[in-house]
Amino acid sequence: MTSAPGDVPAIEFRDVVKRFGDNVVLDGLNFSVAQGDRVTLIGPSGSGKTTILRLLMTLEESNGGLILIDGDPYTHEYKGKKWVEIPEKRRRQVRRRVGMVFQQFNLFPNMTVLENIIEAPMHVLGRSRKDAIARAEELLEQVGMTEKRDFRTTELSGGQQQRVAIARALAMDPEILLLDEVTSALDPEIVADVLEVLRDIAKNTDITMLLVTHEMQFAREVSNRVLMFDHGRIIEEAPPEEIFTDPREERTREFLSAVV
Ligand code: ADP
Image 1 (cartoon, protein in one colour):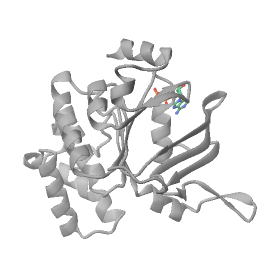
Image 2 (image 1 turned 135 degrees about the vertical axis):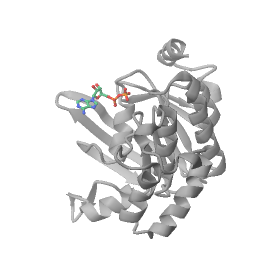
Image 3 (image 1 turned 90 degrees about the vertical axis):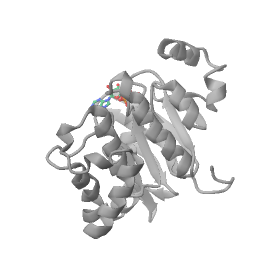
Image 4 (image 1 turned 180 degrees about the vertical axis):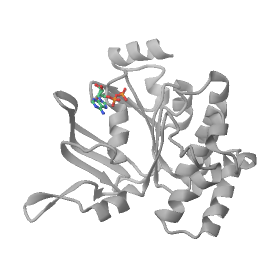
């Protein structure tokens, strides 16, 4: 399900600049993601893909331009003829619509699986413990982790931890889910389990997804648009069936033949 023309995009980058010291990673990046879109970012290491996800999570601050979520500016707005920072409270409200799953899971190691999942719904969304547990149990079922409910996360394999991390992100009912190379830290034999869980989410929800992955087969199955990045710029964008079989740009062709 993608939005009709004229709908406000779920995500919009307008002339976004991001520098680390002298390293200009994004130099006026423009792109948007429609509601319900599943967009994969591909491109060589260092081309800025993770930085884009981290900006969306406000784990990084941009150095210019605008990032909008559902048309709402995220960090700055133009008010009274000048740029002003969005107050922290409003920023958090926008930020809440976005969930992220990381390459290294980032679970709370001193908590059980269940506690990991109910923590933010209770403390950020103000849900009751009972409601948070009920939702967590549904999600554990969905990711196939019901039996591990009361285990400490340190007792789980990488694939199991990643499934818990996916449940934890979904427990916040995000409108947008960011997936940053979520299978890169996993042993090849368990990658398939995690991909299956994500495939299921893509099929059964209308969450907007923005993913960075080197699993081209997965990208092909779940996404409806692929953006190829090089040095912080989009050099090609197309539906997966086009870009993976007959890319227009030589640079895309080279990249794909190196990773597939
Ligand atoms: P990709 O995800 O495409 O591999 P990244 O977004 O991780 O690319 O990185 C883009 C560039 O930004 C790289 O040159 C990287 O070294 C630099 N970079 C990313 N994060 C930081 C950071 N926290 N401090 C300094 N440089 C960074």
